[in-house]
Length: 153
Ligand code: DQA
Image (cartoon, rainbow, N blue to C red; front, side, top):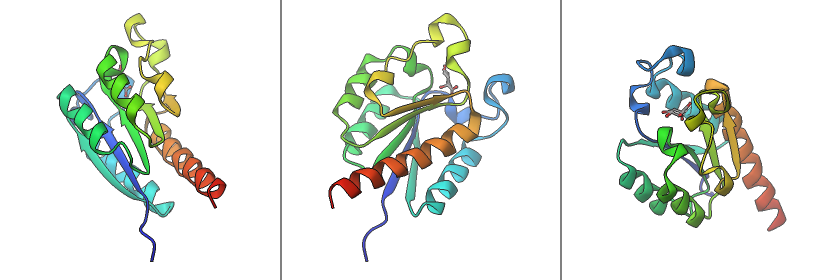
């Protein structure tokens, strides 16, 4: 039997407190509920899922190093999205397809939040769709992997 592919989900700073953050931007979903929904969507597509969250930028980078050859990675780095060139550089090394997802619409918030320094080095970016954006990202990553596998047959 072939091993099921695994989706790695990485959350950055302050996302552990989803559910307590401004509901107008992030809704009321907790990180646990979000991870459970993403895991269920991955399972519907025949994938396993491993979720991590950290408030330490260096740990986030080390997760990216550790999982750089994973089947696919979904990241929401929180505020690091807007200024962390170190995370951008780490993503550049990753061979897995990466989806950048934000619950809120970062393009229509404060000026400093409108820029993502990682968007150029990821395969797809989705923002402003809440949990639905995560589920869409899972489906797109799965489709991307299937496309790649077919070209290597
Ligand atoms: C966020 C948007 C970021 O600007 C913010 O710092 C977050 C969450 C989002 O999911 O909408 O922590 O990435």
